[in-house]
Length: 365
Image 1 (cartoon, rainbow, N blue to C red):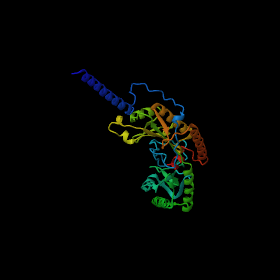
Image 2 (image 1 turned 60 degrees about the vertical axis):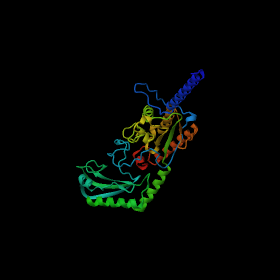
Image 3 (image 1 turned 45 degrees about the vertical axis):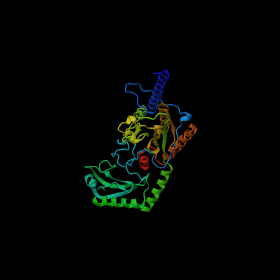
Image 4 (image 1 turned 135 degrees about the horizontal axis):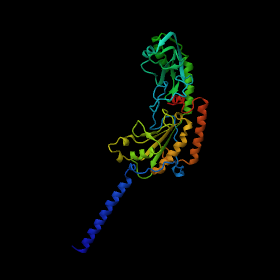
């Protein structure tokens, strides 16, 4: 074999090794980032200041953001809250409230048992898209409450919610409510007194207009700059900031400080990636951080924590924070959004619909 042949063979081997090595390096570089080993020390999760090149973008609409759960209104304090935990009763104003409900008094000739009332309840507690509730005046406590076995009641009241995020109560829904309430009253020998339909529908439209003009749902999109993320990598970094797994695969939530209240923030990514046979090989290139403003008490500092969380995740995960169109916003703009939110909170307070209150959670649902 000549020296030239040997040289060419060596050169070919070097080229082949270089190509294989480069492909291996590129494959490793582009592979989804994996979570740290269990025995490794996680980095500190202190909030980082916003970088002008990685600034969050606001997305506000009158509709739920992608990945956000839709909470059904609650009348009964014994029913589960949107986070599937019992609602604390400390600051509840009660179930039905004339501020956001049509209330129909039902008078009785005598006392009615809770068992009889339960048996007479309508099969479905909705009129169209609006929740319906029936409460009894407890003979012993003098409090309005959902009918309970073994109790006796001197009166009842039926109610239907005036508005929610599906719109205002309309004539058809009101008529359906009347049918359900009348059937209940007949079963317990009661006499209902229904408010004038046109007046209540007009009141519903006014409340719906106010709610639509003061509803805010924010979302930031965190996008990977270089390597994609695996679900485990996202979950590990989010968990360091206090997020816990949600009910839906690919969703995590930041719990409120008080047990049973809706989460402060939501974090969601591709559900299919979370459900993959081998999640470690699933490539996630973006995730959504969301805040449902009327559902969360302003005392939780939800918007400030949303910004801090977005900036920290962007720094730790090598990403940038954008709006849904991939546009970055300056920090001054985010400050202006924060100021606008404070005005929104003040307006809701003035209408006795403070963000995070039971009434606000029902109305903005």
